[in-house]
Image 1 (tube, one colour):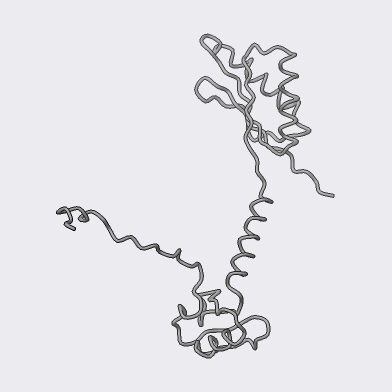
Image 2 (cartoon, rainbow, N blue to C red):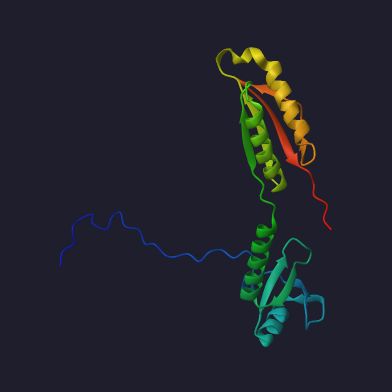
Length: 190
């Protein structure tokens, strides 16, 4: 069977690489002396070969926990179980982390009282849920002449939200918008 010239020229020999480990384990530890800590073991400085023999005798792995210490700190543990528990803890921490969004509420200089009340109730709900609220007055065309009306509207809005939120700053202009940001008040835990 003849091969065509240049047929395999662009093919590369791909080998699947194992993902690099976060910690050095067992034979990857090439330092002569280590500090060994953990359960069922006397804490102290050991020669690496000695520590490896202790780990093998228990059917566990020698894992480098703190590589920057002098000498590096190692533990005798089940490495896969250690990684599993670490991943589980990280997942729990991520779930507990506060997830807050910035909700926007838009007004115009001519927003009437009913709309104002309706939007105020929404803002209170957002703040109670733990989200920030960004309220702004959008000026279009000649409405930019009524900056004072927009500022009064936002200050009135801030006054209404005083119980559930904290004003982060006075109203400021950004382009054709005047905006304020409210943060939720810290709830007292019982």
